[in-house]
Image 1 (cartoon, helix red, strand yellow):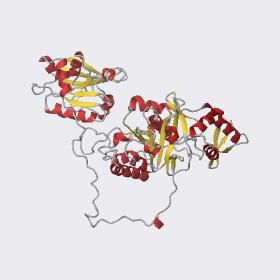
Image 2 (tube, rainbow, N blue to C red):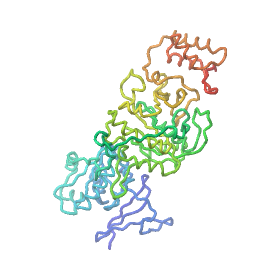
Image 3 (cartoon, rainbow, N blue to C red):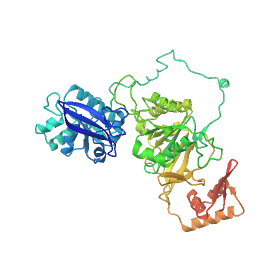
Image 4 (cartoon, helix red, strand yellow):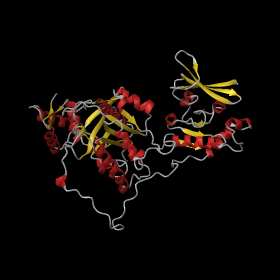
Length: 522
């Protein structure tokens, strides 16, 4: 046999991993170089890659990228000015390859035979929920076994191919077989055999409330982190993940953090694991061995491509991921709207039916679940009503924290409580993002979420000056409880925002003694 072509498979940086060698008569073999530089005719221990991966990664996100079956076809497509790649022969596709297509327009062109079409279908399903759009184009007038290179050889033109892509059917996100969901509960009127499940409270063993972040994020409960896009909510969740993975103290912790590291399970639909999430975790000093990202789910009884995770259909898979490490303490869902499945986010009953089992998972495994959400456009309403979608999201959460921008400082972020059913009032915190990581300020914020979200109104200089004089008169004799000072300030007619700015002007500091917060002059 004669070697007629070799195809280099590299990593994303262009370093050679292995080669596919084509012979005449048509057959293929694979080889890689060992540590001594000798060719070994196997791929034992070698990570698989996509053909011409660096060129795929550098392609414009405005263009369609093509997935074909063979290396020869990729070379031909690129020669025609079309970004393309392949995993190699039929059956060589791996689910992790999908991450290279995140947010891209993808068109899959199968060879004109049954194995090629099955292979293309598996690739398409792997890309659902990852790529921006996936289309499947079966070229016309092709004999069995022909490919896109044959189509070009028969006179096909690039402009004609792109026109066919525009009309090719989009691959739908429907799974290959119906996903089994829990049947709707029977109406008691329809089934008289239904009986209540009752517990006598005298038989219940009391259990103390436990905290992941003392007085801010309870263990065994669902919490919500909400805010407008671009304010650093995802940064903040990764800061939490890093703290948990190392067992480090929280910025305001005065209760004695036990210093026990725990694992974190992460669902992130908006950020790439390799180029965004991992670098941010590294910047925060996380233990990467303890952070696990769920990227998809697969059916155990079939060799199908993975499906996008859904809270309505795949809660058992989430439980498996939580139980796997054996020490999971935190689950992050960012954003929760990306994992609702067919649930209508604006219907209270539907949202309650989705979140009740999720909250039960938190309680069963004693983990804190933090779900990220955006805010709606209802300016002027109370902060507790600003979470996107149904009010049931806020109702189901035991703690709701809002991230907002400080109107007087573009780089400063305010973390304020909108709901805290289980904790004392510990106030808010301020943070900024510096050198790719979250940095908290040491002082407590005496600011409500309603005040943080209120649009700043014009303020007279005299009001601020009077507020400073008021604070000086209250604090010049020594520290006073902050609740007492703010109550007196409001009674004197000062707004919360005016007092806060006067406090910052004077350099007033906050500190905690026992269970009470105090203010003192610097």
